[in-house]
Image 1 (cartoon, rainbow, N blue to C red):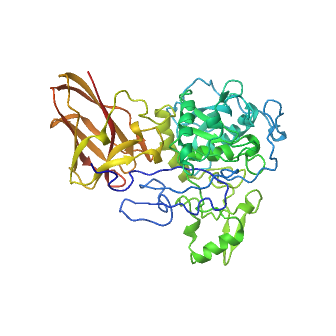
Image 2: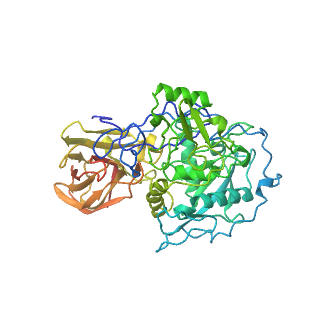
Image 3: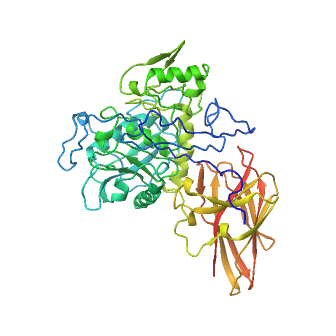
Length: 519
């Protein structure tokens, strides 16, 4: 049986954070626009805020004791959260009491004004106001030791800062320090670091997703201590996770960075960094620009036309310097944009908001959790079955762990990289032992670049056309019932035919994880 034929379907946005100045130097981007070109200046193409297709973001990077945009904390001994008093930085007016923590995030039917913590600029597009309840989890080891250095009051302070930043996106985060703060004992999650750089950590993400599943309708934020007794400044999230992984309060960059949580929430909603490479100092950035012959595209991490080229320079992270001169070129530093690493950012760009909102809607529709096929009952694994494709050689088994370990049954699927309309894949199901009526359910995959297919069973169309396009990179789709079929004993065939291309990419990618037949 063919396996792994063709490129990887969809793309991974595993936005792991590390404090190394070399953190992003080895990452690579593969971009295809509607016309199939591959612009070198970013994920979405300049002046094109919407996604275009297939970004493979790899090699994001070594795990250090500093994290997403962090500098090494001035304190290396983390005090116990049970005895520590709130930091002086928290002596600010308490945030407006949030709504009931039991309410699920529900978009209002009409656009409303954002919360009073910030005033939208006229250029920002109005959206329905969405309130997202936050569940904060302080993680400890299994025996209760090494608790993350965080208090409910500190979480509330970070949430209040996030509300200021996301006001122009018409997104409000609700957090009640007395009700939305819990402690979970899990050494696995407490030590969780970057699974992309440490594949043995993939199972920790599964534990973390299981914790998040206990709080449907909420954005779950896990505050971890980190490996060892010193702790870690590492924080991360992505559209592949159902949680945001944070450090303790003292692990934030530049003291207590008000934009730290808001930055990771940006990754949770699909945003990338504004910079392409983190430089240690001004000379490194100048050398890189000279080697690129003055091409400012080397500083463009997100390909958005309203976020300027960002030569992020770590030595300026915690300061106030507003510009930098690199040879003959002087650039403004985007200190205010939350998706850079500069401390205490204050805003998002209109194009960033335009990218966030569809992912937000997708998460809200799924209770803030991405679908999973991890616990299917008696699945018939598609990638293990005999299949035939027309044209031949375009289908094969694909490892899906890069898109989230445990989210696909058996961590594999059968993927077809169809190149044209009417291409097909016919899957031979195991012989039926008992004739009768069965409900046929297919577990398909949705993603950017995926097209629309029509299913047929024993040469008869079943179900409606399935549009597999998605605003997130790649994700299991909700179970697709193909109706009740009458089966005789023996073999039967399930076929999928490509009928429409992806509306943006023009491609016909198709993926099926498994099927079930229930009497």
